[in-house]
Image (cartoon, rainbow, N blue to C red):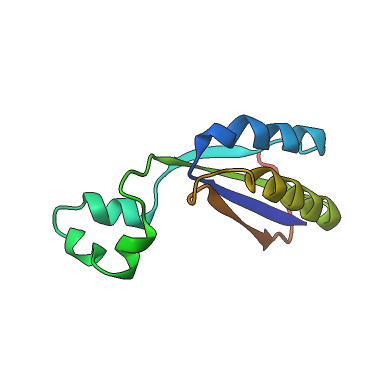
Length: 113
């Protein structure tokens, strides 16, 4: 069992990703508004000087807020297929900052009433 996290910088792909989830039997996901460290540093009045160098070159001038999507996928094979499908989908983007995905092993799920 794995938790799949997707940090999506290009929200134009949100519906496509959710469609992949539904088609592969994902029962639910949580979507959170988020933004990255580069944007936080660039907008900071006291830390913007840290944007000089490699961080500045890796963060586009205009970065919208992103979405972080996460879901627990019970079957590791399903997780691999979902990741492959989403990766293939996002390969068509012309943007350099679509986002990234990662998985974390999950030991158990404990519903709360």
